[in-house]
Image: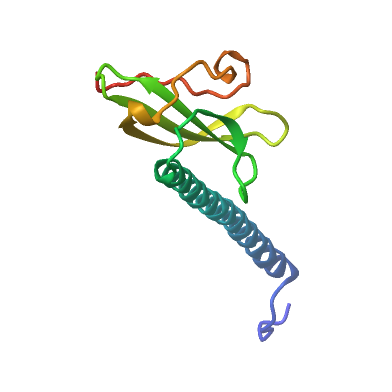
Length: 149
């Protein structure tokens, strides 16, 4: 080979291409992961707003507050919201428990991501009864023990 040759060999070009391909694959993987996390954060923000809105609507109405069985949250796929009411040891207060959970798209199996709000409200405003959906096997995990008493 001529000592004055200034070009690259085929092996050098192949090595540089392989290194570039590995780097691009790593960047694409990070981009996909970042996009998924961004979507999850956006969904969680929408769920938090929906739960807070439901709480405000329940508190603003003059009608009695009743339990709400699990129902889909508008605008957010695979999330359900449930409202439960519990007696508390205090005679004048009841515990209102709002729980939103994410479910798998294939079935109604919770995936472990949830958001919850707990508020104490006047028992005079609540209808605390067996709502029927508590005893059904809906797959909706919503057991609550009041840790304050």
